[in-house]
Amino acid sequence: MSIIVRIPSPLRRFTDSQATVEVSAKTVQDALSAVILKYQDLRFHLYGDDGELRNFVNVYVGENDIRQLKGMDTPLTDGDEVLIIPSIAGGKENGPIFEREEYLRYSRHFSLPEIGLEGQKKLKQASVLVVGVGGLGCPVAIYLAAAGVGRIGLVDFDVVDLSNLQRQILYSSKDVGKPKLRIARERLEGINPKVQVAAHEEPFSSVNAVQILAGYDLVIDGTDNFPTRYLVNDVSVFQGKPNVYGSIFRFEGQVSIFHAKEGPCYRCLYATPPPPGLVPSCAEGGVLGVLPGIVGSLQAAEAIKWITGIGDPLIGRLLLFDALSMTFREVRLEKNDDCVVCGKNPTIVEPIDYEGFCGVSGTAETVNVPEIDVHEVKQKLDRGDDVTILDVREQWEWQIAHLDEAHFIPMNSIPSRLDELSPSGEIVVHCHSGKRSASITEYLIKQGYTDVKSMAGGIRAWTIEVDPSLNLY
Image (cartoon, rainbow, N blue to C red; front, side, top):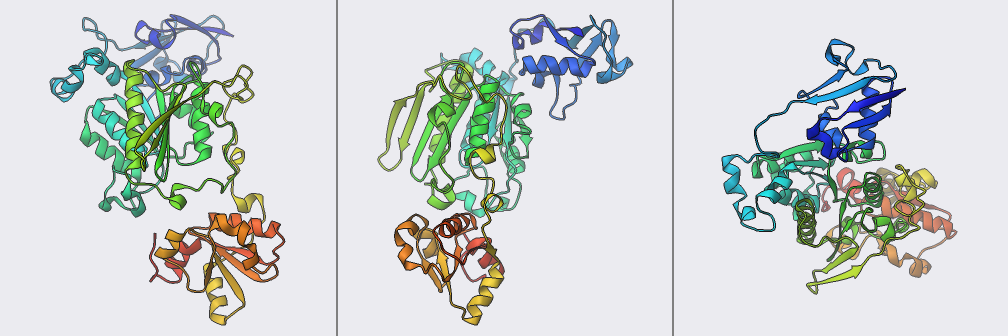
């Protein structure tokens, strides 16, 4: 059935100036959902973080307030009109009004002709989603809050670990073991009480990504894994929103803006992720502590430029930074007309199984990789069993902590040093936490090794459960 939803003038900037939207719906809830599906920026202005209709928004069917009917479940008939009636204040200038303290707080922005009062208003009206509040997300969030971005959404579900403190500048030693989002929110509100911080303490997944991003103007990619990175890209393309990209590894970083309306998306640059294990994580390969501060600051700068409409955004350009040589380089990016997400004939139009796409759904789940518990390994060593303990970590990890009985061959050197391992002998492979060892165990089995197991939990589990005298990292 055909329903007309009338949009009030304050919200028409989110509906391409449309005063009415025609939808097919059976209830008021269906009608509003259909409108938001077309104009997703409306969600934040109609619904709160709890998913409930905001208190300052009333909805009528014809002349009747739905609160006096059946609320959002009020049934509709063909030709009904649904009116959205928010509270408004007449007689004052449009846009946010700065409080007295804010004129001093943002005075250095006001004095910039490129930003000024109008640019600062845009920042106050803006909403930005930061996915991942780690090395990149920390400086991004700090500078967005300091700049006065009105609403900052944070997505993370991790707790603060001691190893984070080398680079994740929102947290301190006293925060170890506490939820990151709780600490981040407190710090950001302390930096700027005028900023609203929304915490999404859950994994950013294909289940919730569309709904979460719908309430924000742009997204900043602070992720550290390929499944989430591709998900951030795809959903930003679906919703027509810019994706401020940043990545770091060891001493190098990358920054760009992917916006399919005006240029390429992330998949135009990297159509598919590398095979699991080919690109080490920062935990495995390391990262210079100051590097995410530099890259994250660049991401924040791009977001501020985008919001205020100043400068030349990094659309179609990839900025490369090398901290060792202290050099910046730039390469051009082209839109791929055959891109499966933003091309002329896209084949991906909704979130997919990103874990499966990136091949990281779990080695033990997709391939039968045998595991052995750390206590069983200890028993074998105590009995003097003829077993090779193969340590596949990096040299720096070996120097921090290792088992005296272990044979050390870094993961990437295994293919060229197979002659050091007996194909018929018993081998227990271990790394830091179990991921790399599972990959090498699978590789050795495919090479014909008949008795290979991965030590579950790696040397971390060994240190916690068997030998606490080793250094934990």
